[in-house]
Image (cartoon, rainbow, N blue to C red; front, side, top):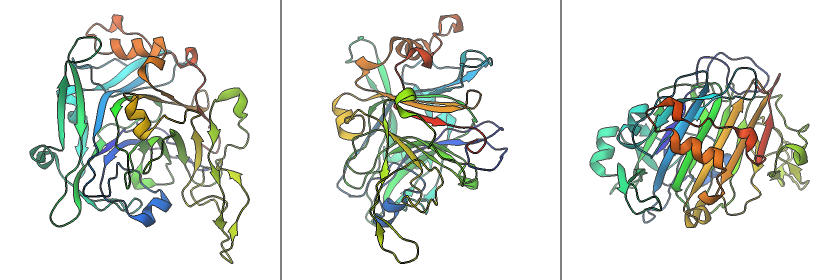
Length: 372
């Protein structure tokens, strides 16, 4: 399944150029990852390769918060939402969208057709009617939880075909955002050979000029959460003082073939250049921050019962920050209360998320002249 979080008509992440379009969020669930595409890491999807592999995505909550906007919500505790930054004079966060329960799929368009060239999944995306008929998307309810109340989960999977390519789902958000606080609560995510799960923001029609922010992404058996930026030339994170602003570390690049003679360069470098064609990093590697929690993604995350992923895209304060909290007992009180009160019909009962009261993020990206 592919989920897009859209962006409002302002400025999207990029390197070097101004742009007047926002970014879309993507959530995808594909099959049969092309081995060559795995090296390129282009457009990100949920990917499953083997026909015998059964992988399920269960979304508990997705929230979008915006500055000085009205909270909109549904009655179900399974949510999807986003929010904008409150650290500057622009004001506190306000709930912009909350996607959950029976209304979850109302916020998305079901893309129909083959996978994108960048990821090259061996699958076919189906429309909404077909997806429900096949049973690869639904809303699942569970009353066996610690709060003794009914929980609703957004369930997404895929199914094999006699022809070979699996039938899968790709959701693309109807709204567009150019900043915000994006909160995703997952109970379970795909993991295993050939799987490529991802949740990201992009303007795919203008990639990479309008950039890409990967919030959740893992290939095969990867078990460490990462956040990546993909931009045009001129955006890099060399000036970020890691020890002061983040708990994670930069991904690395080594063995990159020389563009002239093809001989691998065995110099170990941090992946701090967001330019998708930087000659000293893997093609489209981008600048990548990694969590210091070695069990924050994939199967280890599932064994913990999932977790909460948060990305703050804050042009006013010139940064992008990312967190992962797993297991759920590690979620900060303020964030837990913001999630649990988002469904309240009385906006006065909503708790405003305050990222500055949480622990340091694992990922920090400085944005400004060349990265916004």
